[in-house]
Length: 270
Length: 311
Image 1 (tube, rainbow over the protein chains, first blue to last red):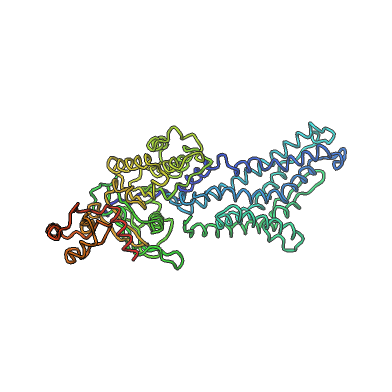
Image 2 (cartoon, rainbow over the protein chains, first blue to last red):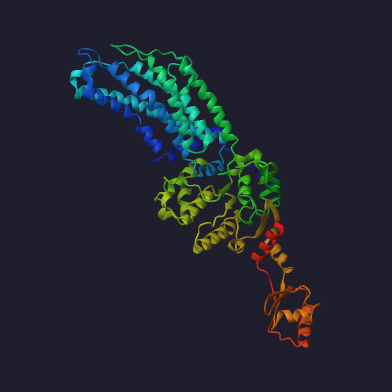
């Protein structure tokens, strides 16, 4: 052979390079702002509720933290969190929908690296958003201690372990939605299609909450795990995964496989 | 970098065919791009140029046939081979929310290219001063140049440029031609450049492939294409009355067509035939205001090639 075959970078180097490039592309995007600021909305709503009306549901002398965390988590998980994951996955994939795929898939990286990079980015942004939400939630509780000393936030403590456990459960519960929405975004090649399916999924999940097989529906998982929040005086959260979380993981695995095959076999005609 | 004297072509396709569903788009293309050449890939819009470019980059998969880059099959070694290829496919796909520099940086990081290349390619395409501006503020010409900067980033041995002069003003087109020549002659790049206008690239290319309706109707060097024209020279006669002349000299003006009231056009046969025609006209008492040989332009040849493929 007259030309030497160039050496291809290893799969992990390809994945790493694609991920670094994808992270750079997030600059000044709605996806990044959503991930950084999305958690503030439920915290702010709850802060206002407790600031103006806290005296109606916090009994004097009791620990307000369990109720505060539970109410806030409920505000976040039922509607806002699934909607956040739907929007985030759509926005991240949509960055490539104006000809970006053509440019990206003509580069010397495998389609597996392209797929894996965006998936890792989504998982990372989802984790950052949820961690920021918890930090904001705790910070807002401390703030309430200063603004409304009569509610007793400053005199009581909240155990960090149950909060972190709940964070872990919620993260696992959102993986099913994330996987399905990522695969849908790759299949639709536009923003509106996956958004419409996502909203339909959320509405259906909320409508079917009393169905005996609701744990099978990934969009209901963040709501289904709210029952893990227990305790009036001290928050407690079981460590074991609930059925909804297992199904969420199953959906995630299936959707990741389907999404990968979609991208792998995709002819670039746009 | 490989030697330009290497015998094997840098890019080669063997019976490359593509169909979109049941509709055939490309028919058994056998492209051959020699190292160190500027290969003009010509064809009218819709002939299959962009589809071919996408097949050459592994964006589409052929229904049959193969693509070889640097002597290796693209289908088996895509990632390794594309490391030595820079491409601009149709209008460059830029991230409008990023600045020009950030667009280059994203591709640079993806390809693992050294950091100093970003400033180098931006300077090379004349965008250094505008690199801080968001790409959404760029004109079409600037976008095209930024797309070229992305293609040049890895210092590739092979450049695949799909209609790179699209959207450029006349000055931009001239600059692009000069840049392509300099990249080939001074930097040793092999370039495959597609266009639907031969006039845009005839001063730049060394080789030409003409595609029409998914078939390669010509492939060869520029002199090969020019030689095709010699058989298509015309003899143009300017006289008083073209129709009268044709009636008076039916044998000598057998293949003539009346191009105007006093103008006849016929295929050029030989110098002797031209002299005989002049003598015949003079003896028939017809005035000769002009008698000249006309060579078709490359554009005429290109049109002839693409039209005959249509028939």
